[in-house]
Amino acid sequence: GTVSNINGKSARNLLDLILKGEKFDEAVYDQMIKDRKISRRLKASKTKLIEDMNGVLSPVQIKMIRELRKHIDELEKHIRELDQDINDAMSDPEKEAAKRLTQIPGIGEDSAKIIISVIGVDMSRFPTDRHICSWAGISPGNKESAKKKLSARTTKGNKLLRSTLVVCAHSAVMKKESYFSSLYNRIAAHRGKKRAIVAVGHSILKIAYHMLKNGESYKELGSNYYQTKTKESKIKSYLTKLENLGIEIPVEYRNQALQMS
Image 1 (cartoon, rainbow, N blue to C red):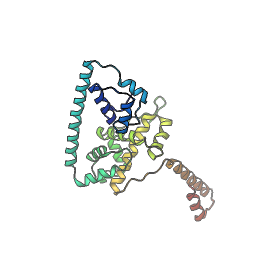
Image 2: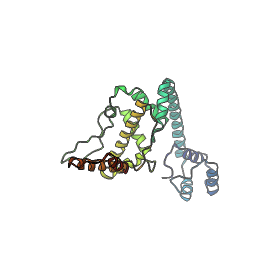
Image 3: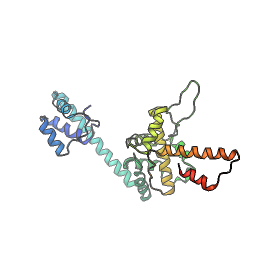
Image 4: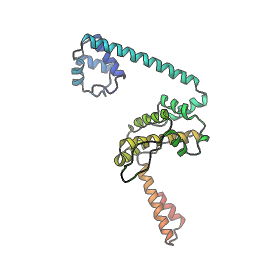
């Protein structure tokens, strides 16, 4: 592919050149890079882009591209208007809550507004994070039989919220050396990518729930969170086993052992 997003800034500027029938060569490429009209991170190389841009389009194809471009522009205009309507309808507490949720990796302004519009700001109606995840339908099924492997299927719930969380999850795992990236890689390695994305969406909603319930800010747990957590669990397990064998462990030694995790 030449570009990853046909509606992106680079793609639009390249389409403008095609529709105008202008030639695209190294000089034009360099100037567009300089003017920041196209990104240096395009999927296609400089040589490949020049080759693709100088292909032959018939008048009918050019007309079709113009009409499609016009249709996309109209749709984007409607979306902007609807976004403004949603923003105007939100109360100040809802706007503040949505702003706080954008601290979570993967959640942008639009996604935050959708999440708040669905779950609200009062988390008292959900006794625990498990309740809200179940209600949202983002709790991965965990039943397994001899003939049926674990799947990425979720329980029934709010489709809009669930799909939004999945989109946020895809974005969140792109941040390397982060908690969400680590969570995704850990689960994907054993249970597949789809189940891993659902798990990340599930984790995002749990974090959002506690942030809204307790008025907290987002805290990055880091990519080594599970490694540290596993070490701590093992130390606690060994200490318990020793105590069950009748071996009394002084408090200072117990605390020292736990600090090693």
